[in-house]
Length: 483
Image 1 (cartoon, rainbow, N blue to C red):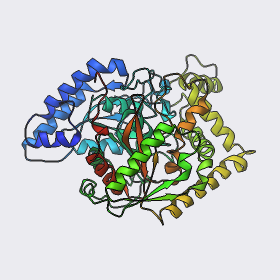
Image 2 (image 1 turned 45 degrees about the vertical axis):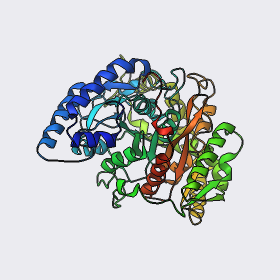
Image 3 (image 1 turned 180 degrees about the vertical axis):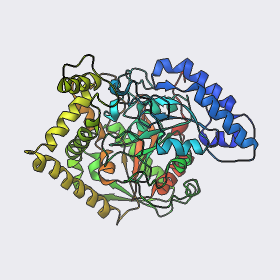
C-alpha cells in the first residue's frame, strides 16, 4: 500500500479495497521502521492519525465521498496544529503546543485527511539543505550521505521514501520546489495569496506560501484543491475563485508557448542538468508545445535582493520570540535584558541568528535606503521582467537547481554557496508567481528537477503541463533503493 499515490488511494478507498485505518496502520509501522534512517519526522501523531482514520472510514460508510477523505498526509512543522508540538525545528519552540489549527490544517482535516505527524525542516524555514534543524539533519533517501534540500526537506524525504503519499510544505525562496527536485518529487508553490498563511509561523511574510509535495502532478492537484481558498483571517489571502485543478490536467499542449530564459543557462549550472532540461524541452515539443527563447535581464540581482528582503522580514517576525510569552526561556535571568539576550541566544541556532542580524542591519536607520529600499526596487524590476515575458509565452521553463543534492556538511563553512542553490527559484517568490518542479532525470544517481513558472493564478496550467509530461516519461515513478 505504501507505493500508492494519492489518486490511487482515493480510488482504493472508494472501491473498498482497504480502509483508511488499515492504510494508516501500515504507514505508521513503516515510519517507525524506516524514519530513524531519515530523520524526516519531528513528531509522529499516531493516536490522532488512528482517530482521524476511523472517522474518515465512518464518513465513507455513511455515503460521503472525496479525494482526500481518509488520505494520510503530514504537515511541515510550522503549521500550527492544535494540541500538537509545533516547533519550527527550533529549540525556541521545542515546548510549544499550538492552541489552534492553521487554516491549511483545518481545511485539510475537514476534507478528511489523516495527519501522520509533523515533518522536520530547516529551523524557522531558513536553509536550503535541512541541516539547520534543532533535531538534526534530514537525510536524502536517494543517498543517505546527501541533503534532501530545504527548508521543506522532511516533507520531501518522507514522501520520496514512500512513508506517506503527500505532505504540506512552504516556499519562501524555493523551499518546496528545491527539495522536490533533489528527491524526485513534484512540488508546487502557488501564487502568493492563493493558500492561507494564517497559523503558518512566518519567516518572511511577503514571500512565504504553503503548497503541496507529492510524487505526481495529479496528486499535487488533489492536495492543492484542499489547501487553496480565500481566508478572511489572513490579510494577504486573495479572494480569487479556486478552479477544479484536477479537471485541468488533461488539456492538450498543442500550441502552448514555452519560454526558455537564456539567463537560466549561465555559468554555475551543472552541464548534465542543462542537458536534462533540454531533453525535457524536446519532450514537451513532441507534445505540441512551441519553444521560444526569452530573457529575464534582472535575474542576476535576485539573490542579493532576496537575501536583504527575507532576513529583514525575518528579523521583524522573530522579534516576538523573546522568552516572555511562550517558547524557550533561559534559566535564572538577572534582569529583563539578560532574559531577552540569553533566551534568544540559546533558543535560536546559528543560521537564524545570522539572518536576524543581517535583517536588523538592513532595516537600521543608516542603511534602510541603501539596502532594503533598493532591494524592493529590484524586486519590482524582476516582476516587470516576468510580466513582459508572459506577454510572449504561456509558461517559463528552466532548471530548478544548479546542482544535484550535495553531501551533508559540504556547504556548512560557506553559507553563501548554499544560498546560490536558490538562484532559479527565488524570482518566483519575489514576483509572487506560481512555480512547479517536476522530476526530469538523474545525475550520478541523484534526482534532478525541471521548473515551470506561470502567470498569477495559473496553477492549473502548470499542473496540466507537468501531468502531460509525466504521462510520457517515467522519471517520477522511480523510487529510492531500500525504500
